[in-house]
Amino acid sequence: MKHINYIPAENRYGKMIYRQCGTSGISLPAISLGLWHNFGFSDNYSVARSIVHSAFDSGITHFDLANNYGPPYGAAEENFGRILQSDFKAHRDELIISSKAGYDMWPGPYGNGGSRKYIIASCDQSLKRLGLDYVDIFYSHRYDPNTPLDETMRALDQLVRQGKALYVGISNYNPEQTLIASELLTELGTPCLIHQCKYSMFVRTPEEGLLDVLEKRGIGSIAFSPLAQGLLTDRYINGIPSDSRAAKSSPFLTEKQITPEIVNKIKELNLIATRRNQSLAQMALAWLLHDKRVTSVLIGSSSVDQLQNNIGTLSNIDFSEDELNSVNEILLR
Image 1 (cartoon, one colour):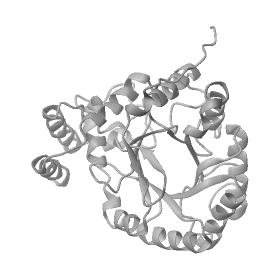
Image 2 (cartoon, helix red, strand yellow):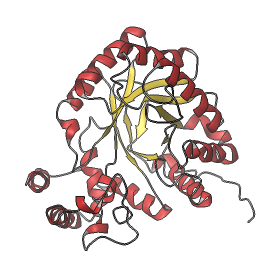
Image 3 (cartoon, rainbow, N blue to C red):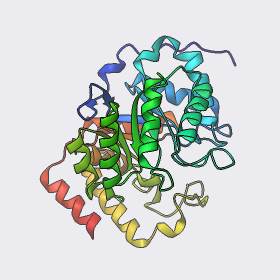
């Protein structure tokens, strides 16, 4: 197949909503693209490349990775690095690229956790796979109870001082851990830019204090798994499709989780979405974005069509009080 040179859409920035990330000078697109799934070596590279092109053409400037995204570990960074090299050399300064370290990456005692050894080595490896001199955001992917929080935060601060990251963030930290971590980073002179948390209509844990801490500390937030691994779409309204994540016994979504109660909630939420002239997925994303403390929602995508459907969310992110009450009544039932 002949290689086609990629030329970004000239009107790309007119298609997206950008929101200030906490009290920083950075704005992020309301919808960001995550490369957790569909960008590994077993996935179709041409499709992955076309998804990235379509995202940027639509004004998505933020691309989120982690060291162990694949499969195998590191594959998503390598593939994204290839796309950057072939298509985005002239546009690097238009992009926010993030990566993370915290979960299992390589064998032995130094390939996991929050130690300075692991954080620094992992960032160095990520930069090599991506073919970059720096990432825009580097995260501590999780709180590590076996490492002093001060050590993890000093490692993040060191990455910024070494020029390997412009900003730092944390992910999967609870409210108390977030407060302490952000205070440590402020004392070091490298404020926490952003917190990445699991948040959706079906997982509302961030409402239990985390969003308040982020607002108080001037930290932005980005929600991952905003569609609850596909539950908040129309895929499971009439049963479990054979090609779905649940049918394939994903560790993140199993058939046992798709109970009659959940299916009934999905059906009722879908009726509200229909009245809003949205798909259920679009309404689920809009519901997160109606809270101004949420800077961006992080979506995955297996196709350009799926990506564009999710971007269509932005045509209606406002809710009436009656709609919010109806949604809440369904979710709390």
